[in-house]
Length: 401
Image (cartoon, rainbow, N blue to C red):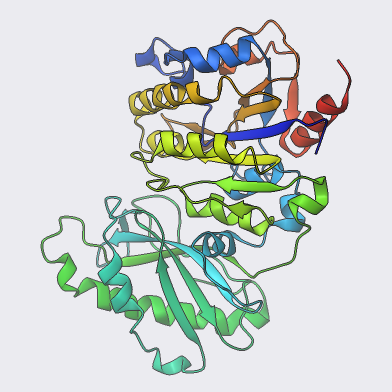
């Protein structure tokens, strides 16, 4: 542990945004009333964090979080499916192939009407039915689905000679046709063939399921992406010498913490959704700083509001976060770091390449007096690549005042 200082590392998902005309050309963060965030940065330091992303792609949650913790995604990302599976508490084997998935709505021509099937959440009965499916052409391959939060699930394939080197069937846009899953290597042909057969039979099952009789948006298809296999990685504690825990509602973020060897701390009502138990999460983080050197606290719904195009909801949720942050203003010997993983642009309804504002409390002060994208441009911490953030924080902790 560094000079008896604890670290509370808060990631507000999709925090940064673009200027919104109907918010007087302010971002949701700029428009929000946030006295506690403003207090923390006024008494702390500001900067910007540039998100990690691969060329010609938009930043992803998993890559950005790994980068925030100093793990290069090219070497360390096992695949989104693996991280989601770990976050659900699944005991996956090293040769299992894991996918993250959405329940979706398509028409009879395989055109996507809604990638999230109206953000359906009560999918337990559908998952139970799908887990009973038998794919006669591939008796040697077993599979199971596990519900995640909302419309999401995890699919795990188990058998010999399976490969994660397959494409997604998700074009990531509505009004596009479902894609065929293709092998990226010769050894992946068996896996791709199984998945295409499984998807065909699951479509028939879901299309005719009683669950869909009264639904305006039938839940009739599975969109799969993020294929991966478990891999070994240096734990956070071994890498940095800090005993760490994770507090999150979303399964991906739990999974990232678990993957890096952090202890998951469960909070009643923390669900990764808009009604998550914010107060409970923040109070729990405060409590466990007594036991752990590094507490990773993740807050998801800012990203969800922006992906839905609901910039007013995002602004109001930021205000809700701020009200609950009052509980941590009196922490002693604690460095508080607050930033986002990637920006989520409300008008685009998607992740975007903008940098996130950064707040560091407990390591000196600069002249930034409000926590926002524009204000933090003038912060003394400058513009920091995500992969370098923790290294810089630790250097600041170790530098005598």
